[in-house]
Amino acid sequence: MIPDITQQSSGASPSWRLSPYRAPREYYPTPPEATRAFLAAERFDGPIWEPACGQGAIAKECEAAGYEVVATDLADYGYGEAGRDFLKLERPLAKHIVTNPPYGAGLADRFIRQALAMTARTGGKVAMLLNLASLCDPCRHHSYMARPPARIYALDDCVCYPNGDPGLAGPYTRRHRYCWMVWDTLSVKQTPKVTTTFHWLSTAPYATRGDA
Ligand SMILES: C[S@@+](CC[C@H](N)C(=O)[O-])C[C@H]1O[C@@H](n2cnc3c(N)ncnc32)[C@H](O)[C@@H]1O
Image 1 (tube, rainbow, N blue to C red):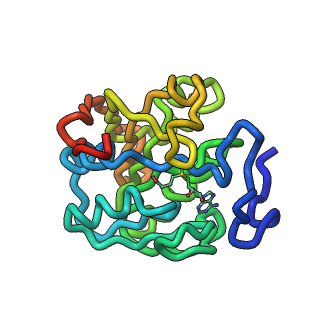
Image 2 (cartoon, rainbow, N blue to C red):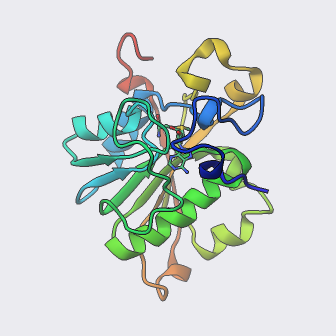
């Protein structure tokens, strides 16, 4: 069963975690080059909402690329607006949604459903950084068939470390492979016609000394 994390802690206490093997608050920040490579391939025609912004790893890159960004998170990392539970918000805060969501206990699936519901109202796109292996799962087969992403971008080199600290990463974390999945907003009639396209992205050209 998925825990109701907002019941556990108002604003998500620093100690909240799904299990002793997971980072507190599911905090696995995105390396900047993973977002830069993605933004070089995918354009957005309006403001972006980062609804699980952490310390702003994705939001800052979106801003650097020229986008207007609304950044919120359940927890307080000193960046964006804290105390906003994305799964409980009723109104979209920007046209497009771009994030690396919390993964554990089905949270990423709930984030995808909520983001698609939000962008159905704004006409925007949803982009999520996800575990590539999550594509191949009997529990998700029907949801992907019913609402396929329009584009998948596999990243050649990307590790999201617990708390951003390589020293805390076990072999399981290092084995993860990541991809960006993008859903366009479509009418119900269009949905069965979506043909997913697959792309490859290299992060190395977007890494700078000190953040690779
Ligand atoms: C994998 S981290 C990614 C952080 C940031 N998106 C990035 O890419 O660096 C997941 C984030 O989700 C946040 N989070 C967890 N549950 C949430 C919820 N229900 N609503 C909003 N944010 C949530 C955590 O506090 C954490 O910052």
